[in-house]
Every structure is written in structure tokens, then in C-alpha cells.
Image 1 (cartoon, rainbow, N blue to C red):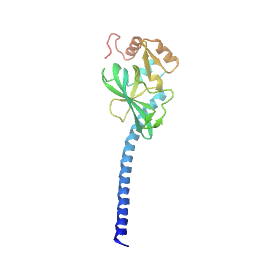
Image 2: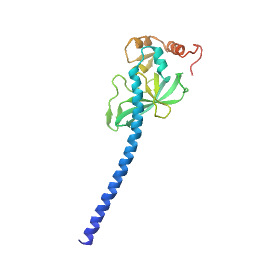
Image 3: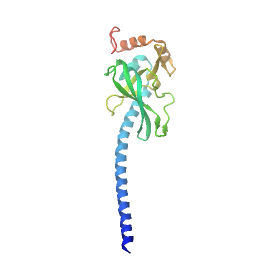
Image 4: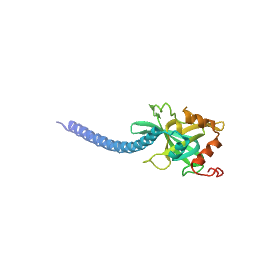
Length: 205
């Protein structure tokens, strides 16, 4: 075998080895990345599991929610988490009724579904992603395993509704939401205060 062929063969072998090492490195990084996302996905699914418990009364909804606020969506993005697409929405808090946040704080609310680089995962039909025309009333649960400030909607579409004409417009139609739709925002605030054992004259944050 002449030198030219030998150099070509050696070069080809080196190329294959380098590409193999790069592939192994990529695989390791992918698995580490995927494991991180799987941890987040499990946390989100735990949050979703809370939806199944639901709430039959406003008192249950208030008691089981970690955070109750009014806020407006100011940003959103899609994330690939464990092979599924989720939409994360940044909400600027406008009023606090329950929870350790303040007016002006930013929180992140996760929804199932979204569009990431053309990869589409449809949102849950009865729990669509919030738009930026808000504001919204939000009953939220904290997502364990994620940094503080990350939440999911409690009890599906019972846990949020768009504020329109001084009332909350819920997507769900049942005995509880029909009653809640009749309350003005102030009346709803009074009910929430009552269940939190707060005096009605204590101003919201």
C-alpha cells in the first residue's frame, strides 16, 4: 500500500474515531439534558395530578391552592420537557389574595401544549393557554422540583378565568363556576378573605 493510500486510510480511521467520540459526548449531554427535563416533567405531572382532585366548593378551591392572584401575561415561550412540549407563561402579578408574592412580581405558569420549532403539541382542549389580553384570576399550585415561582393551574379550567366587566369568565360550566360567574371581583375577594380567616376590611396586597 503506497503512502497516499495509507494517509487516506489513517485519516479515515481518525475521522471515524473523532466522530464516534463526538457522538458519545453528544449522547451523554443529551441524556443529562433529558434527565433534567424528565425531573421537570414529573413535577409538572404531579401538578397535573392535582387537577384530578378538583374542588366542589370555593372553600376547597381556596384551601387547596398555593397561590391566588390576579395578573396579566407579559411573555411566553415553549419548552421541550421529557419529549413533550409545554408552554411557560410569565405573569405579572397585579393583586394578591393568597400566597407569598407581591404586586409587581413575575411568576411562571405552565400549560400542556405549545409550538416549538414547528413541533406542535396540542394544549388540553378544556384548558387552553392564556392570551396576553388578560387580566386573569388564577388559582395556582406550586410545582415541586422546579425553582420557586413556577406554578400550574389548579383543577384545570376551574383554576383560572379571564376578568371581564368586573367578573371572572370561567370556561367550565358547572354548579360552582355558575355561582362564581355571578360574583363581582369584590364579592369574590370577600369570599376568599372569609375562607382565609381575614377580615373583609383588610386590603389585598
